[in-house]
Amino acid sequence: MSTTLYVSNLPFSTTEEVLAGKFGHFGTVVSVKLDRAASVGIRLRGAFVEMQTAADAQKAINGLNFADFDGRLMSLPWFLIERRRSPRRHTRCAR
Image 1 (cartoon, rainbow, N blue to C red):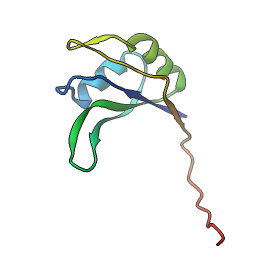
Image 2 (cartoon, helix red, strand yellow):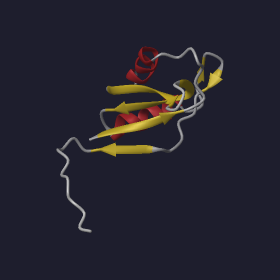
Image 3 (cartoon, helix red, strand yellow):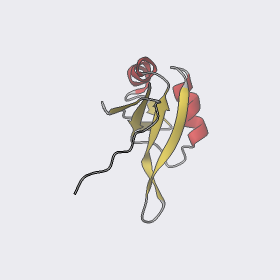
Image 4 (cartoon, rainbow, N blue to C red):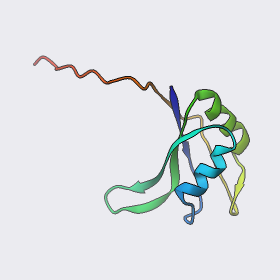
């Protein structure tokens, strides 16, 4: 089961590769997606980092929350999304 963290207060110069490297010290990184304002495509100061396990995510929170990153203090609020890697089942709603 993978766990997704939201990381905020990142510098605008941050790349997905740099974030993957930082979080990779604490476990296996499944994916990194920089947060963008959907309507205009402007890059925001946040990202979603998916870690392979909840334990890896917790290690990353413990090691990186309020850590200095290019002059800014990264923030990892207690916002975890656990995902099970099983097929989705679609059901129809009766009307």
